[in-house]
Amino acid sequence: MEQTITPKTGHPKGLYFLFFTEMWERFSYYGMRAIFILFMTKILLIQDKEASEIYGSYTGLVYLTPLLGGYLCDKYLGNRKSIIVGGLLMAIGQFLMFISASVGEHGGVSIMWAALTAIIIGNGFFKPNISTMVSQLYPVGDRRIDSAFTIFYMGINLGAFFSPLVCGSMDFKWGFLTACIGMLIGLVFFMIYQKKYLISEEGKEIGLPIKKLDLKNIIVIIASIGVIFFMLNFKQLFKSDTDIIGYFIYGAMIVMPIIILSDKSLTSDERNRIIVVFIMAFFVIFFWGAFEQAGASLTLFADRQTDRYIFGTEMPASYFQSVNPLAIIILAPLFSMLWGFLYIRRLEPNSPKKMALGLLLVALGYVVIAIAVKGLGIDAKVSMWWLFALYIIHTMGELCLSPIGLSMVAKLAPLRLSSLMMGTWFLANAAANKFAGTLSALIPPTPDPASTEPITYPSFVGFQITNLYEFFMLFVFMTGAAALILFLLSSWLQKMMKEEQA
Image (cartoon, rainbow, N blue to C red; front, side, top):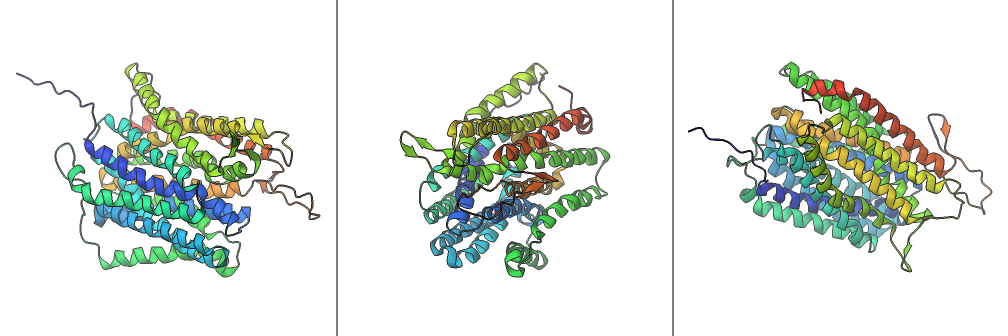
């Protein structure tokens, strides 16, 4: 008698184990990120423009180092050891941020560079490997992977929701120390329970080391730490305006596709699918470049030109960064059900169209805030509800783009290059975050009535930005144009992916 195989609908326990681990790591990262630019401008007394550029360089490098971590994982360490090494380095970095905040303006900047270096390298080991392990829990081609990444994404945002509320409600140094403790909780939990839960549905252990790390690659790791520390300190050491981090990140964005696509072992179908990943990665830069203003210019805007009083108490500016993850926790299940509902009726849009919709929604969010600030006086403040509306609309855009992008890379990347391709996907986030810092530096200065010095307004591609309305409209035009182009390309990209049209 022939047996009917019923597709599984539940998820393995390993998914929720990775959910918990990632939740604490994101608590650590977003707790620090929520207060980082305010810490630089208020405690280290760094100017807005320079602080924005540092923010962009830091967050950009955070997403660049997964290339190194992904390579070392695929060739040597395996996912588990990479996650442990990365988590430990990030905890050390957060502790150094605590010391930097304790020292303050005199000496704190130098300690901050060491802290950022440890967090950047640590994230490189941690980030691509935990994402890759989600897909390893499932058989190849399993449709549950899309919903698995959506659930996993909720874990990211649960940590991101609590961290600004906790870390932003206390003195900067205690906020950084709390972020350190959060990372250690996730790391210890992972080390204790990894053998029990990191098992595929066929009963095989996943994410084990491939072979021992050789001396050559140990030297590569040490050299990478030295290079990143040098790049972060370059401007200060040489009194130069040359942005070598920007050159490095954007250069990697060009070089990596050439290296990967020159692999002669790739089949025609594999090459086409990898090309799709790189094209989508290009459009992701525009999305995150606009979205990541949350930790930069939008935080400065919330701190200075937003009425934050609620029930007679002024809310910390960092609290706004909890709106996005809370909205994701609420909306992610609804979006997951929406895609399932549309799939059953053969109406589900393909991945490129979903991502084009994400770009369109981020443009709409900036339309809302541009309306709020149009004609705003120097001393005037906008209602906090405008900022809430922006973050909720951006959240809907994020749900159309980010988990879909992670799932797409997991499905399209050849298994032997899975971690490297995930690292390459995060390379687009690196370029986007660096771009976000550059864009944040364009926020126009607030005129000082007591000063007689002429105001120097920033400009972008020949367009001078003299007020907040013009600043926010820049993001509307940029992301709106990207959304239109991606939508027009979606059918061609779909053919390259060899998926059925919805």
